[in-house]
Length: 372
Image (cartoon, rainbow, N blue to C red):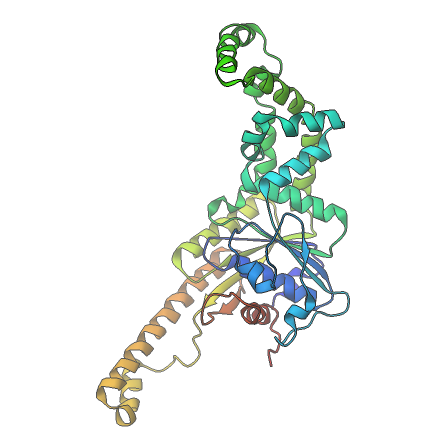
């Protein structure tokens, strides 16, 4: 049951390999908490439309949108009094623009950098890709006090934990030698910027009509004025990730590569001093009813089904039994090495979750709610 693992937490960060159903689990977590009377927002970075489709939203934008509670009517779940479910899909560029606006010392500085062509082309790279903007948005929503709980669905693959380092990487870029040279070039750098580079940019301006040197000067001068704000924000987002109110949930599936990545994630979290709320193993093959030997199953079915059909059924049974046993071995490996002796297991559903009924079934598995 997930509730004891997340009780009192205000931020739930779901990490895991790609293809394990992390986005669905994140949405189901948010739905279950809303059903218990909490005001919850789920923030996804997954560009797939299935979450919006399952929640009955035409699209997800860079600000949370309220899901109509009537969307769940007749699907076996109701939102308790005060419970609200909100959803959004992160737009890294938009989020970084918002951050520039918040940190700019005045309107002139804000307008200069947002309108700057260099910034417009490089802002995604400067933002540290999705990772920094994800936690920046998380911090913004948390600081707003609008929600009881925030659920973050992180990018797939081993880069999923890059956001732990994203604040330091961003500051490393902003405070690096190359940037400082551009902000205040001296010595040889000043001569290069003043002569050869200036001549080159002058030619480019005549050919293209774009004053690239001026654009670069404005960009780096304006960005330099934001350094103190970035330092403070980077420290704040790092503090939020390490706060006791934040917990990480590792989502995996009982396959070799996702299990290895889950173990890797657990180690990274431990090294960073972050709180692991637990491991969720999704899409597990149920082992109930697979205790008998395949030969015994075939013998028992031979009379009612005939030899050929009984053999086919027994073969399918043997495959399912072998898969369940293989998965059980991988789950034992997770128990031993991922820091959670009792991972939460979610049974394999009939197909991908693309509607409310599927989302509710995952929610039932997480919260062990009686679906009947």
